[in-house]
Amino acid sequence: MPSPPPLEAGAPSPSSERAPEAPPAPAVTKPGPNIQREANAHRLALSLGMSGYFVPDRFTVTDGLSLDLAAVARLPMSEPHRFEIGVELRSVFTVDVNQIAAGVPLRFIWGIGPHFEMSAGITPGYYRISFDSPYFEGVGAFGGRFAWGMQFPITSSFFVGVTPASFLVLGSSDVDVLVAYEPGLWIGASLL
Image 1 (cartoon, rainbow, N blue to C red):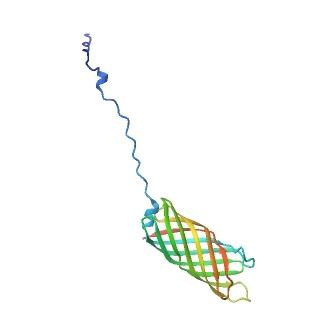
Image 2: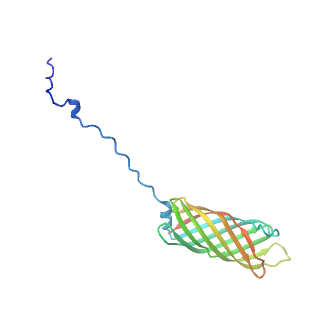
C-alpha cells in the first residue's frame, strides 16, 4: 500500500484546516410577566377581609372580630400605581356589641415589584351599634379607618393582602370616641 505523499513545507495539516469550535451562545432569558402591572390594568376589584378588633385604652369594650366585603373601582395613576374608590360593608362582632357599617374606601396603591404592592388609605363610614342588653338602645356613630397594608398579586386576577397597621376612630354624641386597632388580612379578585 502506498504511503500518503509527504506534506510540503508550509502546507496546513488536515487537523488545522477545521475552524475552531466556538463556545455556545449564552441562553437569553426572557423576563417573566409582571403580574402586578397586568393586575393593575383591571378596573374593578372585589375583596373579602377579616380583621381583629382591639380597643386597648377602654377596658369596658370587649375585643372581637370584623368581616368586610368591598367593591372598588381602580383608577390608574401610572402603569404600576393606582387610586381606588368604592363601597364597603362590614360587621364587627364582640361578646356584647354588634356593629354594622357602610363605608367608602379611598386608597392609594403603589406597585413595588412583580408580586408586591403597598397601600395606604382611609375608609370613612357610618356605624350602627346594637348592644346585647335590654338596658341599652342601638346608637349610630361616624368613624374612619386608617390603614397601611401590603397586597400580593398571585395572578393578574387574584390577590391576597395583609394590613399590619389599621386603626378605627369612632364616635358620636351617643358614643364616646374610641380608637380600635384592627390588623387584618383579605383575599380578592380583580375584574374587567
